[in-house]
Image 1 (tube, rainbow, N blue to C red):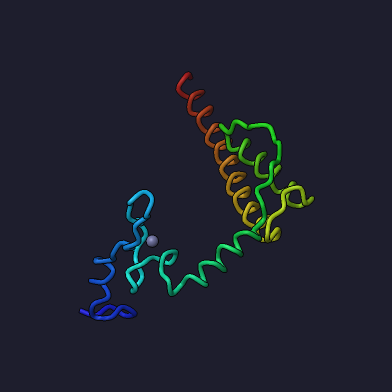
Image 2 (image 1 turned 90 degrees about the vertical axis):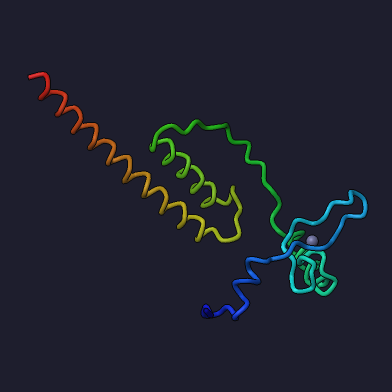
Length: 139
Ligand SMILES: [Zn+2]
């Protein structure tokens, strides 16, 4: 049987994915990454050495980790989640928390804050219903 996009031996090749044959000369340990057709992983394949060097170089230009010095928060309720997300959104908005794509980050966090707000409202409704049931039991 042939699966679209995978050749007749494709599934077999996926199952039989081989381990990179690079062996660290110091430790004697074999690399655990999956091998490309060459038998080496992307990092150890002599053919992809140039791409690897470029990838490492690009990584060097990636934004450095930033120490925000924020106090630790304890998150036990949905309101706590809303507060933390709100704080992060405001840090991104005023530029104190640099990120590569602020609009995407804010949009992403807003979708999570909406979920947390919905959940918080749902919890309030359930609490009201529980109170009503409890009162009726006591009549
Ligand atoms: Zn490797």
